[in-house]
Image 1 (tube, rainbow, N blue to C red):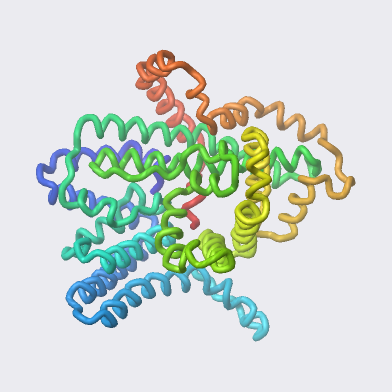
Image 2: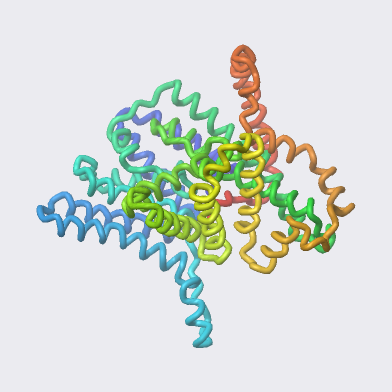
Length: 464
């Protein structure tokens, strides 16, 4: 089940929200939300929902062992088990074929195919955050396995994030108030995210798919390569940030306050800043649970570079068991090392506007690497960005027709990717907020109309 479906919008969400508000106590609301979350996940993963329950229970048992153990070595043993169990499941499902492919190729055997369940990377990391947080602070130990299962499986952020650290929501599991203000703000945020997904991401994605699938018809060109990269950057941004907005909105309706996951990343003036604005919850996880425990930047430049290599290798692999994701992670490792250690002083003399354009250009190159699992296609499009040694035209007439046909949507999407509202005065902003209900209602109507006419179109990050 996806948020941008009629089943969710017209059936699942009204029933769950209604039952939640009928339940008077927090325990009753938790019971409704837990049951709804298991139905939500079981709708698309009828077998893996049992694995989710079982894995959560095993990690809870490890946490019980940590809580009761007196010896430090025993606590660390339980912590190791709590981390390894979900990671082993993730490694088998997501990476077994990728890692064993060379061996099976040498032996002439068929590579085992394991279908990856939705959102496994997200809920695996959430389980790990609980285990580590409970180890670091005994006050965060959760004695109820059902409440831990609610944290792990809570459907607003279950299959595509944001990654919610246990310490940030543990208090709200036991004690939260659902106010009228939270409900209204959450509903507005949900509709805003739905519009991002349906009205912007899906249309940009349709153009990208059409251009890539028919490259022989449209012909390769320099501007064509950049056009495809630009549109994909808008598709993946509005697709993922739209889901995050809907998750944050739904969470607020139920009384949970999730942290922001995006802060206009394309306005960044450096690669490091881009990753402080893009998929913030993933960056927070790797910083607090990998980078800092490895030593962070406290043990000299050489050790810091090694730590960055580990983090960005894992970041690439987290997105998928494919060479392009590994290369994508290493690409950002190189860029960040160059930014921090080689060009740091030089960059202070470059105007922010120019740095912003350069950063966005580097990000677009990264999205080309990210998009193509086929190395040949990836290199073809990367070379097109720079003219393929002068062998490609600047543009083709066929591609220009595509640009003219869809021009209004990419322009609107590009404008929406930046905080242009900040250009207006406070008085104008106040007036725009006054009419927010009207234009959000229009967004909802248009989104539903688009959903009726579209085929199934899941969120990009469902596959991660």
